Amino acid sequence: MAEERHHTEHIPQWKKDEIENIKELIRSHKVFGMVGIEGILATKIQKIRRDLKDVAVLKVSRNTLTERALNQLGESIPEMNKYLDKQTALVFTNESPFKLYKVLEQTKTPSPIKGGAIAPLDIIVKKGPTSFPPGPILGEFQSAGIPASIEAGKVAVKETKVVCKAGEAVPQKLATMLSKLEIYPLIIGLDLRAAYDEGTIYEPELLAIDEGQYFSDIIRATQNAFNLSVNTAYPTSATIGTLLAKASVEAKNLGVNAVVFDSGVMDALLAKAHIQMTSVASKAADKDANAVDDDLREALGAAASAAAASAAATPSEKKEEVKEEEAEEEEDTSEEDGMAGLGALFG
Image 1 (cartoon, rainbow, N blue to C red):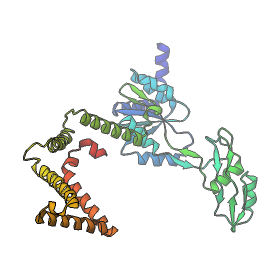
Image 2: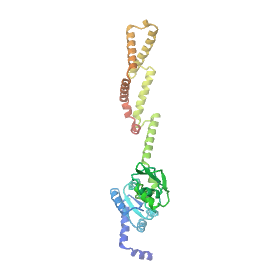
Image 3: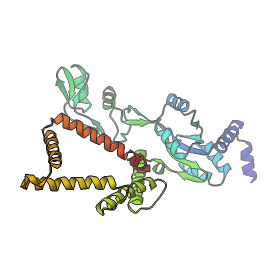
Image 4: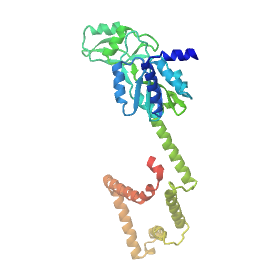
């Protein structure tokens, strides 16, 4: 204990202040995270810090001082020490860990790779023309392992080729040519290793959410729930309108088919009876012209003329009629569609 106290007394004041500053930042923010900053230039870090000023605070400190600060805070916070590795910075925010991850991912930008660096993935040069005119650069392409020739007065890559496999060191000549071709294999930015939120540690695998897929899943689940509710006649605030509209249509159909004399279906019954009557009269008139009176014969003639005129209508006229019918149907069903709840909103 005496040795520990003696050692503590010799910690420089600036280190003590730095430790206290880290502790205060952790206490004053809902979430803090560990981010890797390997390979990021100081100017890039300064730009990222400015870009994050409305969302998060970025702090670069020595790993040893960060470790001391976390240990002194206790509880489960020291568990974050296992994410201290190489060049590490701390980031503090009052947003959720998911929002923090998304914001940090947006700091990442493509960057050229240096000669001697390890390729993080297969580096591919695709077939096609370049902007370079013929000259010594053709030999530079070939010496870098990029198959090239002259086509239409420009240097062109002859075939798509993997010029460096993942895990291999990139030759200097190749690195130079990749930069000239504006092929940037590296993605440089803050790499979130873990985020701490009220006793829970979130790693990137959990925070990396495909928002488009997530939203699609919610829409699909909502549609399925809506359809299930309607098909099982389970009333909810979202489906009651559609259920009532469906019940009204089914009741009217039942009334017409069962010939129930009700004010709600009388018009439909009369229209149906009229159609049946004219059909019978037409067949009777075909067999015996005297089977129908003059008024009915005139009505049948008018109906036949209307049918012939409709059949002779031009395609454009028919198209206009279809559009008018569709417009009327839309007006008739607007109330039902308006009641479609979440299903209509997401449809």
